[in-house]
Amino acid sequence: MNAVRLKFIELFQSEPLLVHAPGRINLIGEHTDYNEGFVMPAAIHMGVQFAFAVSQNNVSQIYSLKYNQLFNLELTNPAKVESPAWANYFLGIVNRLNAIGAPLQNFTCVFDGDLPTGAGLSSSAAMECGFVVGLNELLHLGLSRLEMVHMAQWAEHQYAGVKCGIMDQFSSMMGKKDHAFLLDCRTLAYEYLPLHLGDYELLLCDTNVKHSLATSAYNTRRSECQHGVEVLQKSFPEVTALRDATVLMLQTCQQQVPATVFNRCLFVVEENARVTEAALDLKKGDLHAFGKKMFTAHEGLSKQYEVSCPELDYLVELAIHAPGILGARMIGGGFGGCTLNMIHRNAVETFITTTATAYHARFGKTMNHYRVKPGAGATVVMNG
Ligand code: GLA
Image (cartoon, rainbow, N blue to C red):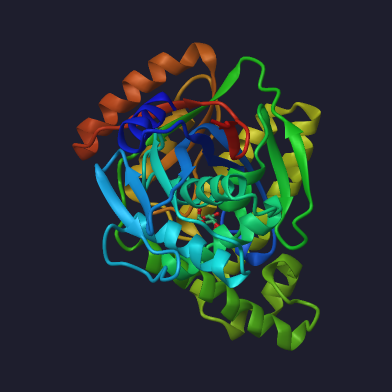
């Protein structure tokens, strides 16, 4: 946070308002959010930091410390830009703020983050959420957290082109220290779940694979699920999203859809059930049962939903055979990014060393790792 503050003072000669917005992990419930199902994410301690102040200039200025780039943003014309790509998250938010007639004033902003981009940890949601929380505070806009979640999701849809669900933005906004939460993506009702992991901790292994087709493949998965719903509805009109479907309903309609669509829908229905059961495991303190569901979820993501990649599969395979690991799976949209491991603290060091070595030998790539802690949602750190 200090680097952002110091850069801000250097560039704009005033004491800024500081905001931290976190990335997220997801313990279980992948690709269920846009099917109106359940997810169990947690915000993490890593995120994006912002410094803001009101400006008397006739343009707003945003400086990316990471890319060493300054972007001039016109509040009255927040059209999408070719470059820098990062500006689009902010332009999307300004578009929404204009749409509701928010009383905007020009501002200056510096941001930076310790979240790797493209690693499945929702750095984009952290950018959107931190930015809107900052402007809300700075300009006294009086927006609710939920309004800001929806604006952030809209920016992702319309300015980044990813038809994402609500999980990432909700997590970055609503996270709670040392807790995960069970979120119903239909009603947005949620329940914080304390993460009593005892001797276990959460370890991310980053494949460093950033799949260029991730956006289009993600949007294709969404339409495959929609296709499934349309077919199911003919026999079961009460099904308005895969959240409402059962395995039996799917089997009844199996012949009416391509095998791919059937597999996608089956995964979602099973994954959704896993989340509810996993929440009970967590409440009972049965981490072994929880971990098994993580492995099963990965299998489904890889074979049925086909959003994994050889690198992710390999890291999970190593985790299955490693001592001290209760569960592991890919997290986020897929096609690269990280695996999440629930691992005994005494096993962490050895696992990191042996896995990174094996991974490099197999793929010639570096495996990064992050020992993550569940953290708070987007927060105003200091009002300068
Ligand atoms: C991405 C999306 C989320 C969610 C996950 C998969 O992170 O942004 O909305 O769909 O993929 O669970």
